[in-house]
Length: 301
Image (cartoon, helix red, strand yellow):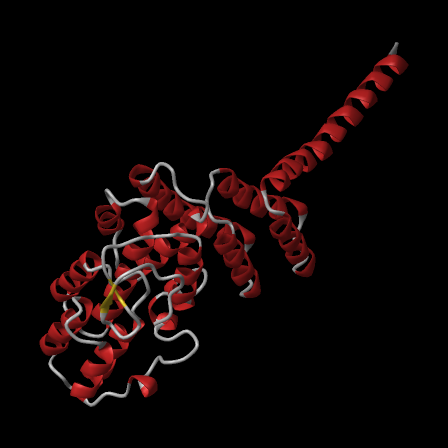
C-alpha cells in the first residue's frame, strides 16, 4: 500500500512539474503568435545577448504581444527594449516603460478611432506621428480638436501642420500666432507637404534678432499664398540653403525625429504617410510657398 502511494505521489509530482515547465512555453508561444516575426527574432536575440532568464524574456514578449494584439505600434516599443537593455536597465523597469508607452499609444488610438472609425492602412504611422507631436507639446486634446471631422485622406495635412506649429513655437513664435498660421495654411491647402522652410525662416529670423511678430506676419503671407518663402528670405537677408537644419532631413530632425521620441523623422514619417494617402485640397502651396492647384504626390520641404 505504501509503495503504491509513493508511486502515486511521484506521478503527481512529475505531472505538476511538467505543467509548470509547459505553461511558460505555452504563454510565450501565444505571445509569439501575436508579434511580427522580425520582432520576435529581435527579442530572442537580445535575450541571448544579454543573458536574460526565461521569465524576463517572457515578460518582454508578453508586453509587446499585448500591444500588438491591441493594434498598437510595436516597433517603437521594441526600440525601447533595445535602448533599455543597452543601458543595462532591468527588464522589470523596461516592462514598466513599455506599459507607459503603450498607454499613450492607446490614448491616441482611441482619439483616432473616435474621429476616423475607418482608419487607413497606415494606422501605425499616424499613431507614431501623434505620439511625436505629444512629445513636442501638442496635447491629445489639441490633436483631437484638429482631427475632428477630418477625413482619413486629410489627416496628413493636419499632422504636417501641427509638426510645423511645434517647430515655429520652438523658435519663438507665440502659440496664438502659430495657431493662426496653421489654421490659415490648412484652409489654403498649404500643408499637403511638411513646410520645413517655415521653421527654418523662424529659426534664422530669431538668430538675426528679427521681431517674432514680424516673421509671424511674413510666414502668414507665405501660407496664404501672397509671398513665397524665397521672397521672404531675400527680404530678410536669409539664405535658406545655408540656414541651420538644412540637409537630408531638413528641420525634421529637430521637430519630429528621434529627439522627439519614437520612429522616423517628422519629414520621413510625413513622406510615408502621404505616399499612402491620396489627399485632395482646394488650394495648396508649392515648394516655394506660392498657392497652386492640384494634388502633390510626396512632400519635400
